Every structure is written in structure tokens, then in C-alpha cells.
Amino acid sequence: MKNLLRPVRMCSACYRAVAFLLAASAVTPHVAAGQYRIIAPSGDTIVFTVDTLRRMLDSTRALYADLEEDPRVGYSLGFGEPVDAEEPEQAFPWNAVDVVSDSSAAVVTPGNLREAARAYYNYAVRRMRVVRYEDPDVSCDSVMNLEQGVVSSFIEGWIVARTLFGGPAFTPLDEFVFARQAGHLRPLIAVRGYRSLGVCTAEWAEANGEAMAAYGEWRRTVFPDASEEAEGAATDISDGRSATPEEPGA
Image 1 (tube, rainbow, N blue to C red):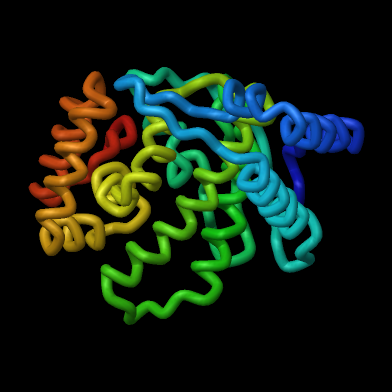
Image 2: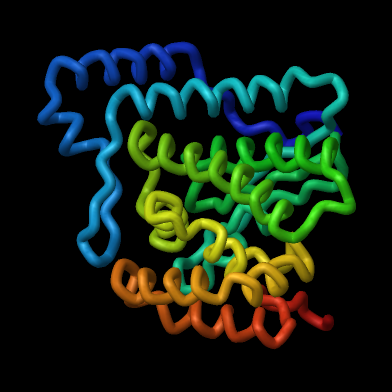
């Protein structure tokens, strides 16, 4: 299955262009301040320094190299149907990436988020590493901590796509960036990632009611238009049901 549906690789000229852009922004900080930022619906803004973006870019390139060069890994890469922000489930990394085993994964990047393909590759590599080394007897709190690291890697790929490669805004994934910045990433995963982590999301949410409440309050302020839908997903978790739609005929 190795590289069955391979997208166009980033050419060396593209990387040189990014290097030039980063070098130029160091000379003109007012340009960097205008370009390297992500803005939430509330107007809250995160500005990224050149050094931070360079580190994220280097990490993303290293993970993709690992995906390509690890002889143990078989993978397929492709693009799927566009995903609407009103029904964003297929854009979430745990739905777009199918990690079959510790050395096998299929990545289907939403067709309207092509620039963010590198974010999904990040997730695939980090998730396979978790599967490879995970202890089946760890607590749900440990499972959530591991998933937080995996999703954080996805977030860095998304930031690189949004700030350096002209990727379009997609509010449901921009929320991941702001949630991590505000310390709410695990509650977001608990609400959004039920299928990939099984009962651990419900167990973690029940044991961390204050964190879940703080996330809900934060979300109503920073992402007000999406709060009602998230609250519905949180109710599904508390009832022991999946927060993602069931497959047709299930």
C-alpha cells in the first residue's frame, strides 16, 4: 500500500521560497505581524513569530520524511470531497486519517483543504507511533495525554498551512489552534474525538467536569456561532453516545 495515492510533493523551489519569505519577514516585522496570524470569530488573534513557524515547518517536514522513508510503514494518500464548516466531522484528523495498525495508515485530506495535507500526515505518523508503543493497560487520563500530543502535531501542521502556504480559513480547525493556546485541547478532544478513543472520552469528561465547563464557557466567548453544536456533542458524550454521526445503515 506504500504511497498508493501520492499527492504532489513540495518542490525544492517551494521550500526555498518559504525560506526567503521567513528571512524577509525577519527584516520587516510589520509584514510578519500582518501575515502570520489566525483570527477567531470573536476577534481574538494569535500571532506567530518567525522562529515558531520555522520550528513547526521543520517538524512537519521531518514527520513527512519519516512517513516516506520508514520501510515498515505502508500508507495511501489522497484527497476526498470538500467539507463544509457546518458539518466538519470529516475534517477532524481522527476521521480523515485511518490508522489501521502501527505501520499502516490511509490519509484522505478534504478536497477544499489541500494545503493542509501536511497536517494530516503529521497526525498519521504520530498516531502510528502511539499505536506502536502504547500500553493497553494505561489509564484514560494517560490516553488523553497521548492524544493531546498527537493532535498538537496536527495543529502545528494546520498552522503552517494557514500562515505559510495560503491555506483557507476553516473555523472548526482554527478552533483547535485557539483551544490549545487557551489550555482547552483535551476537553475539545473529549467533545470531538469520541469515536477514535472509545469510552475514554466519556470517562475523562466525567472525571474532569470543571475542565469541560471551562471549555464550554470559553467556546461560547471565542467561537460563539459553533457553541450550540458543541454543547450537543458534549451531551452525546455524557449519554455514552458517539459525538460523530453514525455510518448510513448503522
